[in-house]
Amino acid sequence: MYPYIAAQICQNCDSPIVVKQKRDKDNQFCCKECYNQFRRKGKPIKINLIGSHYVCLKCEKIFIPTRNTKGMYCSYACSNGAKAVDHKLICQCCNREFSIKNIAEIKRGHYKYCSNECRKRKYRINEDFFNVINEENAYWLGFIWATVRSNKYNKVSLLSRKELLVRFNEALGSNYPIKNSIDNKSMIRITSLRILSRLAELGINDVVYMEFPDIPVDYQKDFIRGYYDSDWGYHYKDNGQDVAVLHGRSSKLMRSISDILKAKLIIDKGEWIVISFDFSKVDGSPRLENKWDFN
Image 1: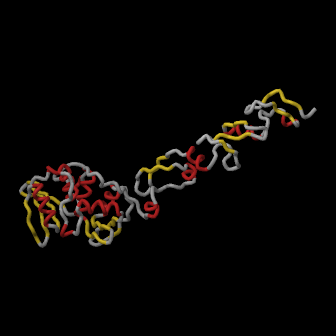
Image 2: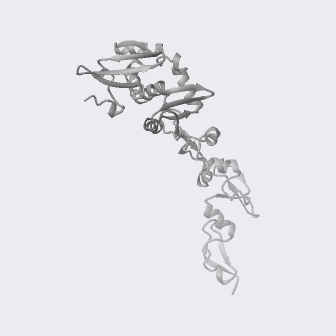
Image 3: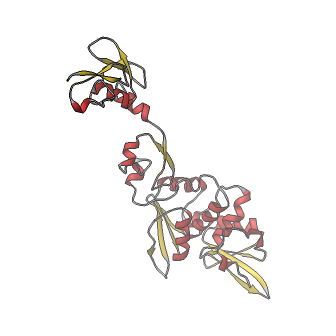
C-alpha cells in the first residue's frame, strides 16, 4: 500500500505529496523544508533538483538558509534591520523621550534609561525644566535665588522649609532627598550637571554676589513672586495698608527688584530690604496661597 501519491499537492511548491506511512496521509507539504518556507513566508527560488535557495526579505539577495537565519534573512544585519522599528520610551531618570529599535531587549526589561549617565545616576530630575523660560520655571528660579546657600563643588544647596522643598521636588520631577538642617529648616542639594550649567548661564552666583537672572521681561514678575514665596518674603499691615517685604544679602539683586517694583530699598544689619506698597503687579500663578492672603 505504501508509498503512494496523495490526492493533494504541496501548498508551497505544488509538487505531489508522497505518503510513506499512515500518519502522512493528511500532509499539506511534500517535505519539512517546504513547510518551513511556507510558515516563515520566505520566497523560494528553485535553482536545481538539489534543493531550494531563498531570497532575503530585506536585501533580496539569494542565499542558502542556515539554522540561525531561518530562511527569511541572509544575515543578522538584515534580520535586525527588517525588524527594527523605533519604539518610544521615557527615561526613568530624566523623563526625556528616547527611541530604541531592539524590541527583544525592551521585553527583557532593559533600556529604562536614555544614557549611561542616567543609568548611573542615583537621583532623577527633569533636566530640561529651565531650558525655555516660562511662568512656572521663572517662579522656581526666584525660589532658588532666594534659598541658595552654597554653590560649590558641582552642587547647589537650597535651605528652606520642608513643605516648600517638597513642592520644588514635585515641580522639577525630582526625587532628591530632603534633609533636616538648622533652625527647623530643611536642605536639598541639586547635583545634575545640566541643571547646574543652565543655572550658571542664567547668572547664579554666591549669595552676596547674586544678580537678577537673564530672563525675558515678561517673566520678571514670576521670578519676584517665587522669591517672595520663599522664607525671604513676608507682608504686614501699615495703617490698614498691605505692605510686602523682601530681603536678601545681595545688593545688586535687591536693587534690581526694587527698580522693577519701583519700591523703597533700605539696608539693615547687613541685609538689603525691599519694601513695596503695591505688590499686586507681581501676582499670578503659581504661588503659595497662604502668603497671598493679605486679609
